Amino acid sequence: MSPRDLRGLSAGDLYDVAEEIRERIIDTVSKTGGHLASSLGVVELTLALHTSFDTPKDKIVWDVGHQCYAHKLITGRYGRFHTLRTLGGLSGFPKRHESPYDIYDTGHAAGSISYALGLASARDARGEDYNVVAVIGDGSLSSGIAWEGLNNAGELKTPLIVVVNDNSMSISKSVGGMSYYLNTLRLAPAYREAKARFEKMVDQMPNVGHQAVSILKRLKGGLKHFLFPEAWFESFGFRYYGPIDGHDIEAMQTVFRQAISLREPVVVHVITQKGRGYPPAMADPEKFHGPGPFDPSTGEFPSKSGPPSWSKVFGEAMCAFAERDPKVVAVTAAMTDGTGLSEFGRRYPERLFDVGIAESHAVTYAAGLAQGGLSPVVAIYSTFLQRAFDQIIEDVCLQGLKVVFAIDRAGIVGQDGETHHGEFDLSYLRLIPGLTVMAPKDERELVNMLYTALEAPGPWAIRYPRGSGQGVAYADALENPSTLETGRAETLKEGTHINLIAIGSMVYPALEASEVLEGEGISCGVINARFLSPLDETAILGACRVAPAVVLEENVERGGFSDAVTSLVSRHNGAFKGLDYIALPCTFMEHGPQDQLRRMYGLNKTSIVDKAKELLKKESTGRGKVL
Image (tube, rainbow, N blue to C red):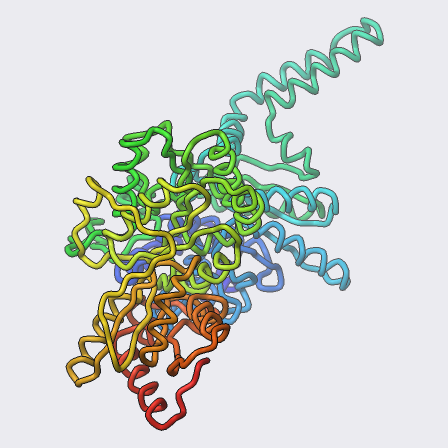
């Protein structure tokens, strides 16, 4: 199936195609997991776009990209769609290497307008002729880069079409002034009749003097902004069309043709329903935003057993410590449920601040909260916190403010792939002066780390992975938390033949590997580093003097924990044994299940055992080295 095949179809036939697409999306995502509700909501919009524009000559830039499943199905990937999000299969996001119809490898919100404007400017500079369309969700419009793109586009005046896909949601329900504004736009048609009557009245009034006419015109202009709020987009230099039913293919085709003919910046505002066509997703679009496998006939998810997720443990700890201390508040960026803060929000609604998809603002906002005497905890996924790197440095750490960063989804995330793996945070946080950086080995340690950070001055960061914890009981820590000594590692096992120095999610694999090595007669020590910054130099240097050591982390090797340890050892003179490490390669990792990716990149028991034996062999032959 290709867009060319669709362009000759009638509207009735296109609606039949829409139903087929929905069935295929539901069937596939029920098996592989994925972004269901958002993709179901844009099926008709996708068909209208590809039948109105001459793609791939014309460029469609999808913002975020988690709504691209219909796009993939009609651009030559129907036969491979069952491989969605599997290792070696189709990505859940647009990927340029997959298809010429994919223009932008997206995964983070709000960059589509800027990227599309760059394409349009390149087109003009090269004297080429094609249309550029950015499709951005209403939730993404809370992000500053979206407005930077709109501002620049209005100034350049180059032909560009921005489709605002308005479903009142990002992942959680959209919040903030932009959400209020779009709500106003949705109601605008109800005011148009009154506006038209007023304009007609002013135009038909008899001559009552120059000053009176001037006043009436100013009044008319002010009323336009009140009754006709699309003037906001127009003030950026865009022609505005909408709101339009985002499930009416013919209406959208008509507007897109008109937008093409204008040859100027245009905003097309469409109203869609997230989860459209699948009742469970329509009833609970947040639950079905990025579900795992489910029963498509009922919408029910398989019952889960085992340890709670790291996010849930964090959320429980936040509730417990907020009950103790009224100064504790939470800040998140459109990720209330994903970061485990839903229960916190129910208990303390006035102490949860969801700022929308605006991570840079979230961090600086938290700095202001801290300066004002509160104890803010900023809960953001690792990959999204990258967007606020400057604010972490300038607005929090340079000021020495008491802000705690709870960094979820650190390390290998899984099927969302390159744009979502949290593989860089230890590297980009380690270099910031004054920021204490920790990673817990289990649930109890996460609770105690959060308590430690809340009780101490200055900025702190705690990073933890996606998925379930280790199954370690932590209820007692919620009731009676312990304060950790800053910069002090924990020796879990003493060893004389080899030591494993691990941080965060790699501590338990290290313990498992040590048991295998002990079973083979190799005395293996295990150190839980706990802290990246400051390092426990005494414990680490001591371990490296006793025996060869393997450093373990779930972060890229460049600039992270292993880099910190090797740098530490190289700076000290002494009789050190061999040193090696296991870390993620400094590359953009593909998508796939977490366990498969960890095996692929050596972050498991078997790889640790092999690496330890390899280092011991080198040491015995005099080829061991400090890296």
